[in-house]
Image 1 (cartoon, rainbow, N blue to C red):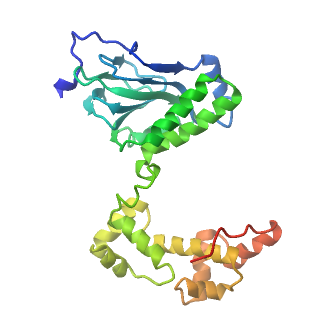
Image 2 (image 1 turned 180 degrees about the horizontal axis):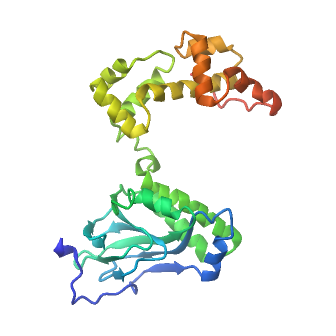
Image 3 (image 1 turned 90 degrees about the vertical axis):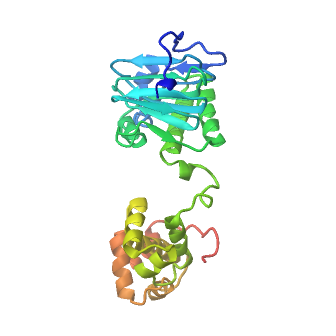
Length: 314
């Protein structure tokens, strides 16, 4: 990857690019974040955009006091970190944990355009670890999203208007959403779920379509065209749950809607969900919800009027 490194003879620079934008928040403002319960868990300290940043280069021998996210939307560059040299292409991002020595720079021939920000806070290390797979994978791929860029611009433009309490609270709440777009890009991008469906996505859709039926593991695996053992492994890897346990969660979610928005008795709710043993249904509901179906329904008697359903139940 030596061809991606900035030449030692290149006029390296950390900023000064035509059209660049950058805001570094005052130390006094940052100190105030630590005392503000609403935002002390995660907050921005620096934010900017460098277009066509030819010869851009930064080296921090002892790392940065903040965590750094860099999002490349054009061109290419590189990152040296943890004894590795990583190439960074268009529609990729870099996550540099705080206090981690690093170097990075733009490619000489295809200068990158990057959105970047520094962040800190009580939960910043956890967010950084999530974005870098536990500090083992410092780059990630993304599909371009105009919504992600608009969210960044909203944060930046709000900060340009000044450091009022409302502005600071707003942009730091937006920061959670912005970082989640890198952590869970498939969930962030609108309208792409159907385009990128895999066998597990289709299986979950099949569960929802057949929520009123009893389904066995073999039925689910056959529908996914995968062996039962392989299906179970893939399903748990993606969702964190075995298939039938996940299916039970969906059933109980639907049971809560029946109990909340209809007057049918608990036995009928059980039958509607394909569970022919109402006693088993009650035990299952209690295990998942932490209270019996009857207690769940009756709680509204002590909590004010029920909210009407948004639409008819399927």
